[in-house]
Length: 185
Image 1 (cartoon, rainbow, N blue to C red):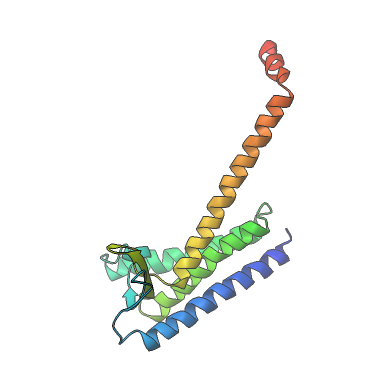
Image 2 (cartoon, helix red, strand yellow):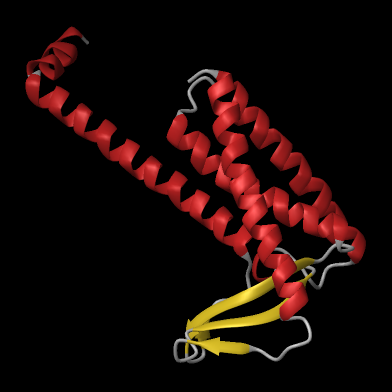
């Protein structure tokens, strides 16, 4: 896939992810910050404002501010830059992979922007679950990252199954090749 096409799709997906995330976070800050939790669909979905100093599901929030800055701002920034180069410079990355990785990139950049703007904090405001079985509080960027990871995983499963089918059909078509190879040894 030509680099210019990858760049186009990468920028489109990233713009969509970052735009949706930042708009919803702004609404959450304006409408939810001073309000009590709001519950919908028999408490399956909740809106509640939170500022997360950790990573996904507040992992690492108990680390020192310096360590959080190094891990969640500096290191994630470096990894995001590396992902941009991987997408653009790897000739084997196709359109579907570009889109999937761009969801991860867009969500990551939007959360990174939050950390830079909000003194190391990310705005979260959604929670789902049934009874006491609930997700952590998350945001649209987290959804984009998870969707991108799910797409990558599904593509890898599909690729693995396809390559296994090709291998099995090749062996079925040429079973004597195994015998020839073992006789030559």
